[in-house]
Length: 126
Image 1 (cartoon, helix red, strand yellow):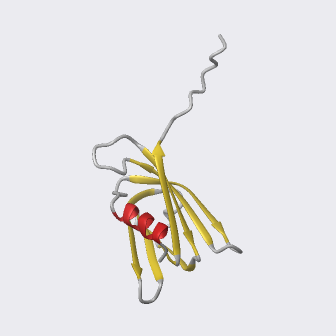
Image 2: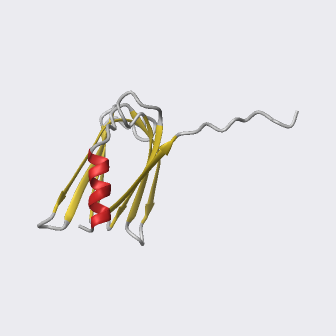
């Protein structure tokens, strides 16, 4: 795994994704790229953040949705992520609070986060 991917993996593993929400999911099939935007308090007791996780070389994408709860319920229980240096392959999985699961394999990762900002809809010209 490249150094920047390892740094991203370490950052993701250090965050708390319980009680956050999946804001968007983008899957680029030809590029085999999966981008997740997750909204919530990623640091215990901290302000709300918006995290963007991009997984490269995505394969083995699977969705378990026995209660038909996804995407109506996008609240997250956890994000599990691991990387095997011998196989040069990572695995990741989201678990929702309403018993849905999304899992995949990947070979690269990028991560960024920033404070979530709610734009005002008020007209400031008055």
